[in-house]
Image (tube, rainbow, N blue to C red; front, side):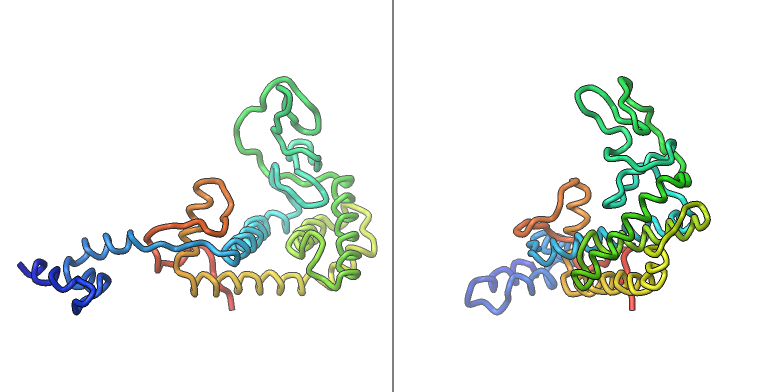
Length: 243
């Protein structure tokens, strides 16, 4: 009887709007129904923030391994390549890359698909570390020419520095690595600044993390104009806005 009395007021000139009715009319069931009707539409800023979040998370996930002087199988460092743990080297193609009925494994093409299974992280060869050192040196030259924030990013530079620092004495480090020692703290601050920017955006846009979760589940990037329904108001459990 109570719900029927409320329904008569839901005309344009009535005293209740639909959102108010949701709160008053049906308890938790009505709230769930109303929530499902809410749409969050992705913007250009959502797309940009999602890309930044992915880069920051990549740095976070690899920090401990790289600081030990090791690299995970198939980990990609821009301007260096994909790491094949069993070969202790970086290559152009990912481990297990398929082309024309053959697979690229540990630097060679083979007719058999490699066995599934996770390989342990390993320490690169001195030659591979020299590749990383050369890429890090070049990145710093690019940074000097552009005033910073360009090239393939401070996140990649920081990860390369961590890897080289974890392998001191294993390669012939030059001025590039020594120069990076003085810049690493600034790169770290830059990552923290990006983390904070994503956290602030997520707090101000309740549907953002829901959009990120949907995008990752589907394996597709966020595009402006995409919509997601319901489930807003909660924060991602694994991402902090920082200080």
